[in-house]
Image 1 (tube, rainbow, N blue to C red):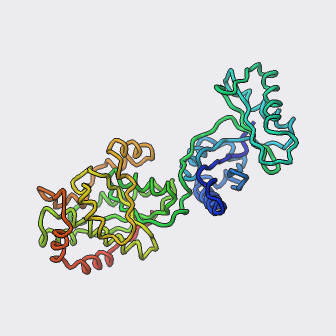
Image 2: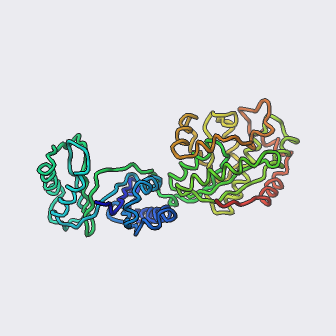
Image 3: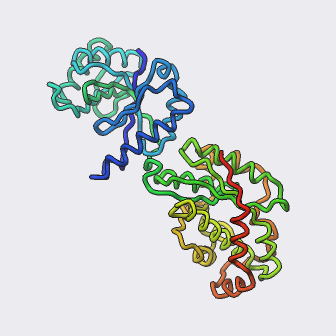
Length: 390
Protein backbone atom coordinates (compact mmCIF):
# COMPACT_ATOMS: atom_id res chain seq x y z
CA UNK A 1 0.00 0.00 0.00
CA UNK A 2 1.65 3.19 -1.20
CA UNK A 3 1.18 6.55 0.54
CA UNK A 4 -0.98 9.12 -1.21
CA UNK A 5 -0.63 12.21 1.00
CA UNK A 6 1.53 14.00 3.52
CA UNK A 7 -0.78 15.54 6.14
CA UNK A 8 0.74 18.60 7.85
CA UNK A 9 -0.50 19.98 11.15
CA UNK A 10 0.24 23.39 12.61
CA UNK A 11 0.18 24.81 16.14
CA UNK A 12 0.18 28.56 16.71
CA UNK A 13 -1.71 29.24 13.49
CA UNK A 14 -4.83 27.76 15.03
CA UNK A 15 -4.81 30.57 17.62
CA UNK A 16 -4.86 33.41 15.11
CA UNK A 17 -8.62 33.91 15.10
CA UNK A 18 -9.80 36.04 12.22
CA UNK A 19 -6.28 36.15 10.77
CA UNK A 20 -5.93 32.37 10.60
CA UNK A 21 -6.75 32.21 6.89
CA UNK A 22 -3.84 34.55 6.08
CA UNK A 23 -1.36 32.31 7.93
CA UNK A 24 -2.77 29.13 6.40
CA UNK A 25 -2.54 30.52 2.88
CA UNK A 26 1.05 31.62 3.47
CA UNK A 27 1.93 28.17 4.75
CA UNK A 28 0.37 26.55 1.68
CA UNK A 29 2.32 28.92 -0.57
CA UNK A 30 5.57 28.18 1.28
CA UNK A 31 5.07 24.42 0.99
CA UNK A 32 4.52 24.75 -2.73
CA UNK A 33 7.57 26.96 -3.20
CA UNK A 34 9.94 24.97 -1.01
CA UNK A 35 9.05 21.69 -2.69
CA UNK A 36 8.78 23.02 -6.24
CA UNK A 37 12.45 22.84 -7.20
CA UNK A 38 13.42 19.33 -6.10
CA UNK A 39 9.99 17.70 -6.08
CA UNK A 40 8.10 19.18 -9.02
CA UNK A 41 7.26 15.68 -10.28
CA UNK A 42 6.32 14.42 -6.82
CA UNK A 43 3.62 16.88 -5.76
CA UNK A 44 0.23 16.98 -7.42
CA UNK A 45 -1.28 19.70 -5.21
CA UNK A 46 -1.17 21.33 -1.78
CA UNK A 47 -4.58 21.95 -0.20
CA UNK A 48 -5.95 23.50 2.97
CA UNK A 49 -8.19 21.22 4.98
CA UNK A 50 -9.94 21.68 8.30
CA UNK A 51 -7.08 22.07 10.79
CA UNK A 52 -4.40 20.71 8.47
CA UNK A 53 -2.63 21.03 5.11
CA UNK A 54 -2.61 18.11 2.69
CA UNK A 55 0.26 17.53 0.26
CA UNK A 56 -1.14 15.30 -2.48
CA UNK A 57 1.51 12.99 -3.92
CA UNK A 58 1.94 11.81 -7.48
CA UNK A 59 2.93 8.17 -8.11
CA UNK A 60 6.52 9.41 -8.35
CA UNK A 61 6.13 11.14 -5.00
CA UNK A 62 4.96 7.92 -3.36
CA UNK A 63 8.38 6.47 -4.25
CA UNK A 64 10.34 9.44 -2.83
CA UNK A 65 9.03 9.52 0.72
CA UNK A 66 12.39 9.70 2.51
CA UNK A 67 13.69 12.89 0.79
CA UNK A 68 10.20 14.40 0.92
CA UNK A 69 10.06 13.89 4.68
CA UNK A 70 13.45 15.58 5.02
CA UNK A 71 12.28 18.59 2.97
CA UNK A 72 8.93 18.95 4.76
CA UNK A 73 10.69 18.84 8.15
CA UNK A 74 12.36 22.16 7.27
CA UNK A 75 9.19 24.12 6.50
CA UNK A 76 8.42 26.55 9.30
CA UNK A 77 4.83 26.57 10.51
CA UNK A 78 4.45 22.77 10.49
CA UNK A 79 4.48 21.31 14.01
CA UNK A 80 4.21 17.69 12.90
CA UNK A 81 3.31 15.79 9.74
CA UNK A 82 2.44 12.27 8.67
CA UNK A 83 2.74 10.12 5.59
CA UNK A 84 -0.87 9.03 5.01
CA UNK A 85 -3.05 6.74 2.92
CA UNK A 86 -6.33 8.05 1.53
CA UNK A 87 -9.54 6.03 1.40
CA UNK A 88 -13.26 6.67 0.97
CA UNK A 89 -15.47 7.75 3.86
CA UNK A 90 -16.98 4.35 4.53
CA UNK A 91 -16.31 2.45 7.72
CA UNK A 92 -15.51 -0.83 5.94
CA UNK A 93 -12.97 0.92 3.70
CA UNK A 94 -11.44 2.63 6.74
CA UNK A 95 -11.18 -0.69 8.61
CA UNK A 96 -9.60 -2.44 5.62
CA UNK A 97 -7.07 0.38 5.12
CA UNK A 98 -6.18 0.43 8.83
CA UNK A 99 -5.53 -3.30 8.78
CA UNK A 100 -3.28 -3.04 5.73
CA UNK A 101 -1.43 -0.13 7.33
CA UNK A 102 -0.82 -1.87 10.66
CA UNK A 103 0.03 -5.34 9.44
CA UNK A 104 3.31 -3.92 8.09
CA UNK A 105 4.23 -2.53 11.52
CA UNK A 106 5.93 -4.25 14.44
CA UNK A 107 4.03 -3.80 17.69
CA UNK A 108 2.29 -5.66 20.48
CA UNK A 109 -0.11 -3.00 21.76
CA UNK A 110 -2.00 -0.31 19.87
CA UNK A 111 -4.79 2.20 19.97
CA UNK A 112 -6.90 3.98 17.36
CA UNK A 113 -7.32 7.78 17.48
CA UNK A 114 -9.95 9.31 15.21
CA UNK A 115 -10.49 12.97 14.36
CA UNK A 116 -13.82 13.53 12.63
CA UNK A 117 -14.07 17.08 11.26
CA UNK A 118 -16.66 15.94 8.68
CA UNK A 119 -19.70 15.80 10.95
CA UNK A 120 -21.96 14.24 8.32
CA UNK A 121 -20.07 10.96 8.70
CA UNK A 122 -22.55 8.64 10.44
CA UNK A 123 -20.22 7.27 13.14
CA UNK A 124 -18.69 9.22 16.01
CA UNK A 125 -14.94 9.25 16.59
CA UNK A 126 -15.33 6.79 19.46
CA UNK A 127 -17.39 4.43 17.32
CA UNK A 128 -14.74 4.48 14.59
CA UNK A 129 -12.08 3.74 17.21
CA UNK A 130 -14.01 0.71 18.43
CA UNK A 131 -14.79 -0.64 14.95
CA UNK A 132 -11.21 -0.36 13.70
CA UNK A 133 -9.73 -1.58 16.99
CA UNK A 134 -11.92 -4.69 17.07
CA UNK A 135 -10.78 -5.69 13.58
CA UNK A 136 -7.11 -5.29 14.43
CA UNK A 137 -7.50 -7.35 17.61
CA UNK A 138 -9.31 -10.06 15.67
CA UNK A 139 -7.05 -10.23 12.61
CA UNK A 140 -3.63 -9.36 14.02
CA UNK A 141 -4.06 -10.69 17.57
CA UNK A 142 -2.79 -7.45 19.10
CA UNK A 143 -3.83 -5.86 22.40
CA UNK A 144 -5.39 -2.44 22.92
CA UNK A 145 -3.56 0.00 25.22
CA UNK A 146 -5.05 3.46 25.53
CA UNK A 147 -2.17 4.97 27.52
CA UNK A 148 1.08 3.29 26.49
CA UNK A 149 0.48 1.85 23.04
CA UNK A 150 3.44 0.70 20.95
CA UNK A 151 1.67 1.97 17.84
CA UNK A 152 -1.15 4.42 17.16
CA UNK A 153 -3.40 4.25 14.12
CA UNK A 154 -4.60 7.78 13.35
CA UNK A 155 -7.79 8.26 11.36
CA UNK A 156 -8.74 11.68 9.99
CA UNK A 157 -12.21 12.02 8.49
CA UNK A 158 -12.15 15.29 6.60
CA UNK A 159 -13.87 16.69 3.53
CA UNK A 160 -14.97 13.84 1.30
CA UNK A 161 -12.31 11.31 2.26
CA UNK A 162 -10.53 9.63 5.17
CA UNK A 163 -6.80 9.58 5.81
CA UNK A 164 -4.92 7.03 7.88
CA UNK A 165 -1.34 7.03 9.20
CA UNK A 166 0.70 5.40 11.94
CA UNK A 167 3.39 7.98 12.69
CA UNK A 168 3.64 11.67 13.58
CA UNK A 169 6.93 13.21 12.47
CA UNK A 170 8.23 16.32 14.20
CA UNK A 171 8.23 19.44 12.04
CA UNK A 172 10.19 22.69 12.26
CA UNK A 173 7.45 24.49 14.22
CA UNK A 174 7.37 28.28 14.40
CA UNK A 175 5.46 30.50 11.99
CA UNK A 176 5.32 30.44 8.18
CA UNK A 177 8.09 32.54 6.66
CA UNK A 178 6.64 35.77 5.29
CA UNK A 179 3.98 36.29 7.96
CA UNK A 180 6.04 38.57 10.23
CA UNK A 181 7.52 41.07 7.76
CA UNK A 182 10.99 41.61 6.27
CA UNK A 183 14.37 41.74 7.98
CA UNK A 184 18.02 42.09 6.99
CA UNK A 185 20.46 39.70 8.69
CA UNK A 186 24.06 40.74 9.31
CA UNK A 187 25.83 37.56 8.17
CA UNK A 188 29.46 37.39 9.25
CA UNK A 189 30.52 33.89 8.22
CA UNK A 190 30.94 32.73 11.81
CA UNK A 191 28.79 30.39 13.89
CA UNK A 192 26.37 32.84 15.43
CA UNK A 193 24.78 34.87 12.65
CA UNK A 194 23.48 31.89 10.59
CA UNK A 195 21.78 30.55 13.73
CA UNK A 196 20.29 34.00 14.35
CA UNK A 197 18.98 33.94 10.77
CA UNK A 198 17.43 30.52 11.41
CA UNK A 199 15.53 31.81 14.44
CA UNK A 200 14.40 34.91 12.56
CA UNK A 201 13.00 32.65 9.83
CA UNK A 202 11.34 30.46 12.43
CA UNK A 203 9.33 33.41 13.71
CA UNK A 204 8.05 34.16 10.22
CA UNK A 205 10.48 36.85 9.06
CA UNK A 206 11.38 37.04 5.40
CA UNK A 207 15.15 37.60 5.45
CA UNK A 208 17.92 38.77 3.16
CA UNK A 209 21.57 39.11 4.10
CA UNK A 210 24.24 41.78 4.39
CA UNK A 211 27.93 40.96 4.71
CA UNK A 212 30.88 43.28 5.45
CA UNK A 213 34.35 42.40 4.11
CA UNK A 214 37.84 43.94 4.15
CA UNK A 215 39.02 42.92 0.68
CA UNK A 216 41.78 43.48 -0.53
CA UNK A 217 43.32 43.42 2.95
CA UNK A 218 41.69 40.05 3.63
CA UNK A 219 41.02 37.11 1.35
CA UNK A 220 37.76 36.36 -0.46
CA UNK A 221 37.14 33.39 1.80
CA UNK A 222 34.45 35.20 3.79
CA UNK A 223 32.49 35.92 0.59
CA UNK A 224 32.59 32.25 -0.34
CA UNK A 225 31.52 31.25 3.16
CA UNK A 226 28.52 33.57 3.36
CA UNK A 227 27.40 32.35 -0.05
CA UNK A 228 27.53 28.78 1.23
CA UNK A 229 25.73 29.75 4.43
CA UNK A 230 23.01 31.59 2.53
CA UNK A 231 22.57 28.56 0.31
CA UNK A 232 22.30 26.28 3.35
CA UNK A 233 19.62 28.54 4.83
CA UNK A 234 17.59 28.58 1.62
CA UNK A 235 16.11 25.21 2.53
CA UNK A 236 14.37 27.10 5.36
CA UNK A 237 13.12 29.66 2.82
CA UNK A 238 15.75 32.32 3.46
CA UNK A 239 16.12 34.82 0.65
CA UNK A 240 19.00 34.23 -1.73
CA UNK A 241 20.22 37.83 -1.89
CA UNK A 242 23.41 39.06 -0.17
CA UNK A 243 24.42 42.72 -0.02
CA UNK A 244 28.22 42.61 0.03
CA UNK A 245 29.70 45.76 1.61
CA UNK A 246 33.36 46.84 1.27
CA UNK A 247 34.43 47.95 4.75
CA UNK A 248 38.23 48.30 4.61
CA UNK A 249 38.21 52.06 3.93
CA UNK A 250 35.85 52.69 6.84
CA UNK A 251 38.12 50.70 9.12
CA UNK A 252 41.13 52.67 7.96
CA UNK A 253 39.38 55.95 8.82
CA UNK A 254 38.57 54.69 12.29
CA UNK A 255 42.09 53.40 12.86
CA UNK A 256 43.66 56.74 11.86
CA UNK A 257 41.26 59.08 13.64
CA UNK A 258 39.79 57.36 16.71
CA UNK A 259 40.96 55.81 20.00
CA UNK A 260 42.22 52.25 19.65
CA UNK A 261 40.05 50.89 22.45
CA UNK A 262 36.85 51.98 20.71
CA UNK A 263 37.59 50.52 17.28
CA UNK A 264 35.25 47.52 17.49
CA UNK A 265 32.43 49.63 18.89
CA UNK A 266 32.85 52.15 16.07
CA UNK A 267 33.07 49.41 13.44
CA UNK A 268 29.81 47.92 14.64
CA UNK A 269 28.00 51.24 14.82
CA UNK A 270 29.01 51.98 11.23
CA UNK A 271 27.83 48.54 10.18
CA UNK A 272 24.42 49.21 11.69
CA UNK A 273 24.17 52.58 9.95
CA UNK A 274 25.00 51.04 6.59
CA UNK A 275 22.72 48.05 7.23
CA UNK A 276 19.85 50.34 8.14
CA UNK A 277 20.27 52.27 4.90
CA UNK A 278 20.26 49.04 2.87
CA UNK A 279 17.28 47.73 4.85
CA UNK A 280 15.21 50.85 4.24
CA UNK A 281 15.99 50.77 0.52
CA UNK A 282 14.67 47.22 0.44
CA UNK A 283 11.64 47.84 2.67
CA UNK A 284 12.97 45.70 5.51
CA UNK A 285 11.55 46.60 8.92
CA UNK A 286 14.25 45.19 11.21
CA UNK A 287 17.90 44.18 11.49
CA UNK A 288 19.00 40.81 12.89
CA UNK A 289 22.44 39.88 14.23
CA UNK A 290 24.10 37.11 16.22
CA UNK A 291 24.91 38.96 19.44
CA UNK A 292 25.06 36.82 22.58
CA UNK A 293 25.32 38.66 25.88
CA UNK A 294 28.84 38.56 27.32
CA UNK A 295 30.29 36.27 24.67
CA UNK A 296 33.02 38.70 23.55
CA UNK A 297 34.19 42.17 24.56
CA UNK A 298 31.86 43.97 22.17
CA UNK A 299 28.86 42.11 23.61
CA UNK A 300 28.85 43.34 27.18
CA UNK A 301 25.62 44.99 28.22
CA UNK A 302 27.19 48.45 28.01
CA UNK A 303 28.68 47.88 24.56
CA UNK A 304 25.53 46.32 23.15
CA UNK A 305 23.60 49.34 24.35
CA UNK A 306 26.04 51.82 22.82
CA UNK A 307 26.15 49.95 19.50
CA UNK A 308 22.37 49.46 19.32
CA UNK A 309 21.73 53.14 20.05
CA UNK A 310 22.70 54.09 16.51
CA UNK A 311 20.01 51.99 14.81
CA UNK A 312 16.75 53.63 13.82
CA UNK A 313 15.27 50.23 13.02
CA UNK A 314 14.31 47.47 15.42
CA UNK A 315 17.45 45.44 16.19
CA UNK A 316 16.64 41.78 16.86
CA UNK A 317 19.16 39.61 18.73
CA UNK A 318 17.70 36.08 18.76
CA UNK A 319 20.74 34.54 20.50
CA UNK A 320 21.08 37.07 23.30
CA UNK A 321 20.54 34.52 26.10
CA UNK A 322 22.26 31.53 24.50
CA UNK A 323 25.72 30.24 25.30
CA UNK A 324 28.24 29.06 22.72
CA UNK A 325 27.53 25.36 23.21
CA UNK A 326 23.84 25.90 22.53
CA UNK A 327 24.59 27.92 19.42
CA UNK A 328 27.02 25.29 18.14
CA UNK A 329 24.45 22.55 18.67
CA UNK A 330 21.80 24.41 16.67
CA UNK A 331 24.37 25.13 13.94
CA UNK A 332 25.02 21.39 13.64
CA UNK A 333 21.30 20.64 13.48
CA UNK A 334 20.56 23.17 10.73
CA UNK A 335 23.60 22.31 8.61
CA UNK A 336 25.69 25.49 8.98
CA UNK A 337 28.30 24.33 11.50
CA UNK A 338 30.74 22.72 9.08
CA UNK A 339 30.65 25.81 6.86
CA UNK A 340 31.03 28.29 9.71
CA UNK A 341 34.14 26.65 11.17
CA UNK A 342 36.04 26.93 7.90
CA UNK A 343 38.88 29.49 8.34
CA UNK A 344 38.36 33.02 7.02
CA UNK A 345 39.41 36.60 7.78
CA UNK A 346 36.66 38.38 9.67
CA UNK A 347 36.57 42.12 9.00
CA UNK A 348 36.02 42.90 12.69
CA UNK A 349 39.18 41.04 13.72
CA UNK A 350 41.26 43.12 11.32
CA UNK A 351 43.13 45.92 13.12
CA UNK A 352 41.93 44.68 16.50
CA UNK A 353 42.98 46.85 19.45
CA UNK A 354 45.20 45.32 22.12
CA UNK A 355 42.80 46.34 24.87
CA UNK A 356 39.25 46.79 23.57
CA UNK A 357 36.85 48.78 25.72
CA UNK A 358 34.42 46.47 27.48
CA UNK A 359 32.20 49.13 29.04
CA UNK A 360 32.01 51.93 26.51
CA UNK A 361 30.31 55.19 27.41
CA UNK A 362 28.07 56.73 24.78
CA UNK A 363 29.56 60.19 25.36
CA UNK A 364 33.08 58.93 24.58
CA UNK A 365 31.88 57.15 21.45
CA UNK A 366 30.02 60.20 20.18
CA UNK A 367 33.10 62.34 20.73
CA UNK A 368 35.24 59.85 18.80
CA UNK A 369 32.77 59.88 15.91
CA UNK A 370 33.19 63.65 15.57
CA UNK A 371 36.54 62.83 13.94
CA UNK A 372 34.80 60.86 11.18
CA UNK A 373 32.85 61.97 8.14
CA UNK A 374 30.18 59.36 8.82
CA UNK A 375 27.84 60.50 6.09
CA UNK A 376 30.57 60.12 3.46
CA UNK A 377 31.73 56.76 4.80
CA UNK A 378 28.21 55.38 4.65
CA UNK A 379 27.58 56.89 1.22
CA UNK A 380 30.80 55.44 -0.21
CA UNK A 381 30.04 51.98 1.20
CA UNK A 382 26.56 52.04 -0.28
CA UNK A 383 27.85 53.20 -3.65
CA UNK A 384 30.23 50.24 -3.80
CA UNK A 385 27.81 47.60 -2.59
CA UNK A 386 27.72 44.42 -4.63
CA UNK A 387 24.50 42.40 -4.73
CA UNK A 388 25.04 38.67 -4.94
CA UNK A 389 22.22 36.27 -5.78
CA UNK A 390 22.42 32.72 -4.47
